Amino acid sequence: MQIFRDSFGPGFCEFCGCLLSVSSVCQFSIEVCFNSDPVLPKYRRKVKFLAQRKTIVGRGQSQLYYDGHHPMAITLQSSCNVVEPCPPSDRLSQLVQIGVAHEPDRMKRMENQPSIGLNPIQEILIGPGLDLEFESDIDPSAPEPAQYETAYVTSHKSPCRAGAFSIDGQLCATGSVDASIKILDVDRMLAKSSMESAEPQNDQQGHPVIRTLYDHIEEVTCLEFHPSSPILASGSNDKTVKMFDYSKSSVRKAHKTIQESTLVRCLSFHPSGDFMIVGTDHFVLRMYDTTTTQCFVCCLPTSQHKQAITAVKYSQDGRIYCSGSKDGDIKLWDGVSSKCVATFNRAHDGAEISSLTFTRNGKYLLSSGKDSLVKLWELSSARCLIAYTGAGSMGQQVHRAQAVFNHTEDYVLFPNEATTSLCAWNSRNAARQNLLSLGHNGVVRHLCHAPTSAAFLTCSDDFRARFWYKRQIHVSA
Image 1 (tube, rainbow, N blue to C red):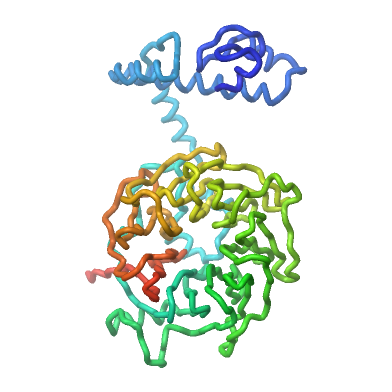
Image 2: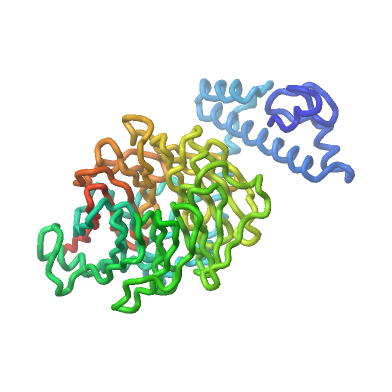
């Protein structure tokens, strides 16, 4: 509301100079904006926005009086600096009922949302995802994360710090400080767990590890599967991004390599798979053509981060992508022009950004930082809507930890560095769920959830990666 105080000082209308309260807009300004063409459109929009907000506050105050909540109505009036109290009225409740009655069916709206490469049955099972604008109070349909159990364990020769699931959830991959990468079959892991205990397996018949890749010479820092082709991309401290065609059973080496100038920290494929964004120890965000490996960067140097990039992610439709940095800022970029369209300055009070992920509908962005907080941002308003708290008893974290949604976006998951346990919240109301002990003997360095089922992967400094799964219980009639 301070947009109307630039020219005449605090509390004065920008157009006529009359004295205003914080939530007021003078009638003269409204008439000028809507009846006079010379006024700039952006000011017309600002006045209209404030007028709408004033109406909403008034309706809310009237409804509180009508329902008998007089202290709350007075608090609302004082906090919004409304000069004149509003009379009791049930109009807000009536408007809500009318709006809900004429609200379009949610599944019809889902038809216009981008597909994530699943068949219709899978999309029905995982549901429409998180949308606080509609159905903000529904009960979760997915199992609580604390009910998951370890189904399989695989080991590396050094700390395991990278992991990823394929888009259909049938494969997962792990990467290690020993420079190796393993690709595992999810169905084989589940078959093993149904017969044996969750310990590292040595027999080769039906072994879950279907590929072991050796082409990096230093730590593997990040992994991501191509959205439509049998290709796995990896980044490393050896300053390279490599792409492996795992459709060939004999594959060990990458078929394509991108040479970077500094160590690679994160990467993300465009939904088409034609492009890839890469974050490195350098502050400039890169975009690569995955066919030609040609590099593109934003033409405005002032739009770039100030320190190393720690997290990148494309939205589901590829229209925007995001980046987070050690400088504590989160940036949104146009997916076509690669121009920075928004910056969330000091998104975690200046703490380093650890992870970023979009909701499937592209309305929200989930972020985590080294301040041990997880935040949900509304992109249309650039506001933090929800802060998921209570994960870090020690405050600042030493290592980056990923905050992720489960496959239905009913829950937010985040590993606790101090206790090696998994924290979870209801994504809609931030209600804390039961803790899950992750069973690692070292810090959990990476967490990723399967996109289509109740399964997630944890990678740890104890050299192990654990595959967690919640089996469905079938009750016979």
